[in-house]
Length: 309
Image (cartoon, rainbow, N blue to C red; front, side, top):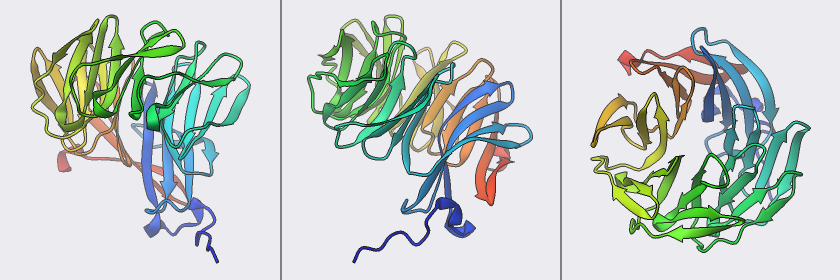
């Protein structure tokens, strides 16, 4: 006889069993962030994802939408076109007409990316890349690798790139992809496309920049896995799994935040937003501020004193 979870919903969990963690966060105003926050038990037998609007100054929390499931990814653009990945192979997309629900033929989807009115993408294990065309139809792209795909970025279909296992770098060509051999060998976890420069980074501090088919390695000095990269106010920032955040100055990687595991960086008009489990951090170019998310009857946010961390 198979037993179901002891608690039917994540909100039924006693406070001591609740685990709260942000999947992603974006600046949507001078002191306001939009956060996809996962509430679950530690074993993730039950879960809930809440999209929240949180004040970084007062800690006020407004709930935009709640989904009862365990989610893998949340991606959004400035026009609030959203993509959610349920753990496994389910994709939910929000556009003008509301949310749609799609079951894709993949063993496991890891991440998503949106080019708004051009196409949406979901990707993951076995080299799977799916694209959603205008009109809502999902198609599976022909991909010249079975390595898992971890990240994707571009400003249009013309400069779209994807990266993943065993140093995989792919460049979109029409409805397909061309593989670029940069001789890296390590898993790549993030990519940033800026004109003809494509910055990639990943496991054990590997990072570099692709221009055309030529690759230049960065000497990062980082031993942990680099999980995210973004450009903010002219500089490249890198988040990693053990230290926190570094910035590239010239050829040197300089530490800017020691906070441990930081896995998302999102540049905004005023501040760069970083995600670290239940903590949302923001950087204005000179200093950091942070809030910690929680749940007790409802979602909460409390200021974090970074000097005491």
